[in-house]
Length: 376
Image 1 (cartoon, helix red, strand yellow):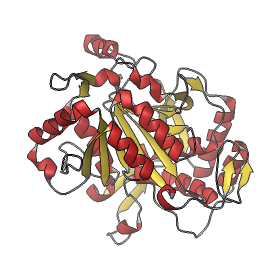
Image 2 (cartoon, helix red, strand yellow):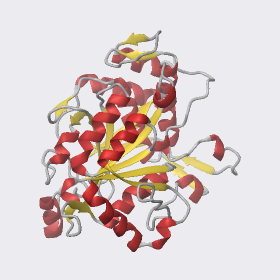
Image 3 (spheres, rainbow, N blue to C red):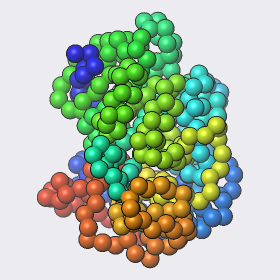
């Protein structure tokens, strides 16, 4: 059956999670981030400083690495992100999924692919709306090329494998690749002919036409825990997922090139604009940055603090909840409560798949590993 085509297999070149690969790790207390082009807004800076003081880490700003040499200049002109030592951290800068409809991706950060995270603890929700943990990925429009088989732009197989590998690393089991109906057979053929091992056990990959995908998502917003949407379809999928979550965003957005290039935000709007302080977005974005830098304990503390507040019915003024009893507070107060340890509780909370399963109960029985913490 075409709709349920299973394309599961190990992806060559994707590294396994550090916890299962290495018995000796050096954990630092410094988070290296590239300095954004514009100054950090004051309200965001105060919140970042408070969270870092609470976590016992410091942020070391490094300059963005510009293009050097003819090859890098050519790559930059093509829209490829230049190599840099650390990602740009600017979650206050939001862009719209509508920008993906431009074939060259004008207005989007340079990179190969983009992934945004929808994490909803589902306070007061039941049934198909009870808890969402979805990674929405798309190739950068500039990374797609015209496919003669279907007449529409498609990403290279290597890029599709990279995105599938990212979902596998995070332990996601159900992935949908959402395409135009006329492109579906081309994508299926591309994957099947590339590597027959893609049909072996592992992540389940459904290649779905947009019409079928929207119907499935309406019936069950959590049907897939990872989605790859073709660039010109991303805004439709994003809007439906936002409606299912009863929020217009913003979601934390990671831009990937040869490495993690930038951390920003994605929300339904008409372009790019600066956000006022959004505490849940900042906590999630900083957690993703910390995890990417190997500061897994700091990432977990941030996630647990926000999750406990959410499960207690504490939300910010800009959030919406259908729960009968909620406490709305300012974003600054939200940050203060997390830093004060007000969210500490023995109540179990679900792991965030973005962390790749590190620290889950399933790993608790594994042999202890030596972690060396570098001094500040």
